[in-house]
Length: 164
Ligand code: PNS
Image 1 (cartoon, rainbow, N blue to C red):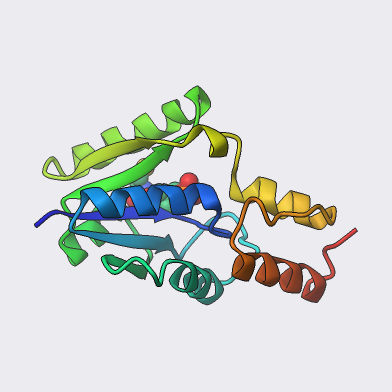
Image 2: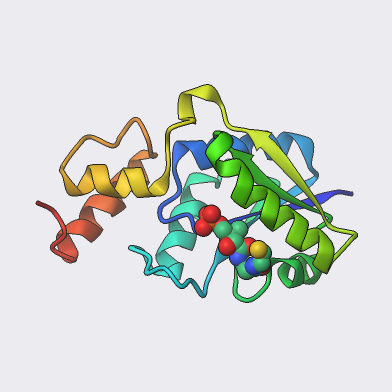
């Protein structure tokens, strides 16, 4: 039984992430979305808010679980019994960082494989930071995130007085 961890910040989750989750759920018996807790970057959404949004928008995929983690990814994978780390590759610009991470994790745990999913072309430009920036300028982000996330982004920006 192969279990994969799909780790990330998910600040917030986008259709690009969801596409990877959906496809990974068809390849692996179980997919655990690992939501990073202790970030150096200052996220827009709290950990609880990010987990809540992911749980809501993945509730229709039975073999997906959402778990937050701090510390090293390899330790989290060991803790949840995962054999594989899944990451999406959007463009060549992602490659250097992703390769460095995969190789570091392999060095830390030779039994843990990283597998890359090529991002679907229609989401190759999409990132959480683009979504946050577009929303700050009051653009319509409904084609980039599910309705629930769309609502949460606008509520959060209003609450934090971040809209222009
Ligand atoms: O969505 P992101 O921010 O690109 O995800 C990055 C993430 C969470 C996969 C990465 O920062 C990570 O694995 N952090 C945990 C700390 C760790 O294990 N670092 C060593 C790998 S280089």
